Amino acid sequence: MMSRSTDILLTAAAPAIWGSTYIVTTELLPAGYPLTLAMLRALPAGLLLLAVVRQLPRGIWWGRTFLLGALNFSFFWAMLFVSAYRLPGGVAATVGAIQPLIVLGLSRAVMGTAIRPLSVVAGLAGIGGVALLVLTPAAHLDPIGIAAGLAGAVSMAFGTVLSRHWQPPVPPLTFTAWQLTAGGLLLVPVALFFEPALPVPTAENLVGFLYLGVIGAALTYIVWFRGLARLDPATISPLGFLSPLVAVVLGWALLRQDLSLLQIAGMVVVLGSVWLSQWAQAQGAVRISPRPASPAAVRPSAP
Image (cartoon, one colour):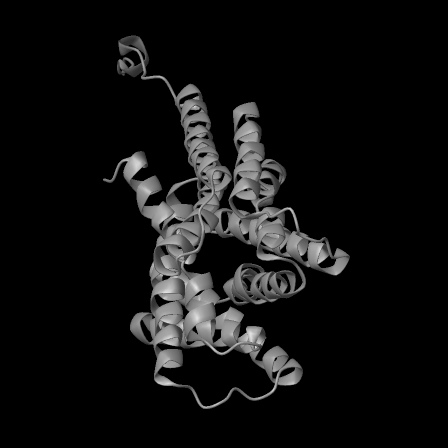
């Protein structure tokens, strides 16, 4: 049995890898096809996993799967791209960073999870750290972009909480296959209606599609949903702060983008907020864990 720390570290690998999405998209994929790219990221990966698991949802899980697919993929990615196109990347990332705080409230409303003050502090610190990482003084605020960013954060927060609340009697691999396929199918008509046909892909495009589909979707979401099956949403949601951190580091390392002292301070704040959130949730788990039964309590009664 893996320890809680190992589960957290393994789950953290997913948002860390998602941090590479920006550089892969900008350097390897054609520009101007956000919905089509989102569909091609989700649907082939979902169908591939379905071919592996060879199991479809049954009964109530059909509706739940398509709802979760919409929340975690279709609607979330659509709003994410709208926000990214209408806002500077820093503003979009900062707006999306509110998600862990939304998860805290939803976890309380849906699952009755206690809201720990230190978790709120950690969430606010994480937003501040992300702002230091990616926000620039010249950033402008577009109302539609802000609304889309908030809608995307709410969508992913609902998807995270409900994915934990609704646990199907199947492995995370199967649960991931269902959601990716459903999310991809929902994106097909939207992409066909709103966007022109994708040009013939180049070799670089194919590498980008392969990476985002296999690594950035299939494998990482298997890890993410596995974490949701083992840990509460308030524990794993702050791990999402690692995505903008990794994106900035990759931009510095691979694209030679500048890295300022404020951004380095933002990295420290982000890492500190992630640690604080994990510590707060761990302390809460210790306090509510049942005490060992006393010898008198386990003594068999007389016949």
